[in-house]
Image (cartoon, rainbow, N blue to C red; front, side):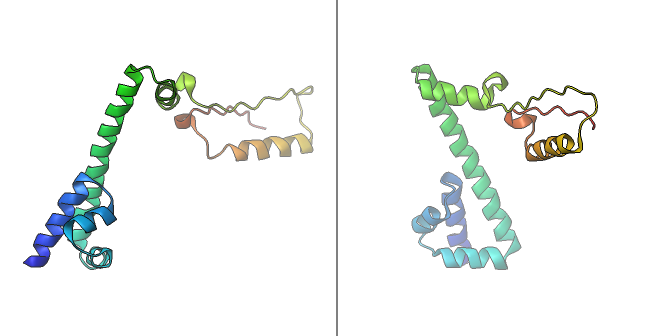
Length: 136
């Protein structure tokens, strides 16, 4: 029973601040014990993951609230951060342009274009980059 109470106390602290070391210190349990329990007990592992997720959600809400306060106070860095991450017009963009004189590309030009497109293969519209390609 004592172990269950310690685990529950640890999970409660983890829900408030999703940092394992801090939750360990607050509940008086070692990190080794926590990770051993996580490895050995599937139910505890799930509860721990859920507690971390819940704690992160709370911290995210607090952080957004603080960011909005800074925006209202006309903090340029806060305004820029918000726009860069929340408004597609202000996100970083990558544009690759070229001029092709002939309709047919040389093998070297085709290789260069394929390499350039492959460099952008990890990039998508979610982070503000659009890639247009024409089948070669």
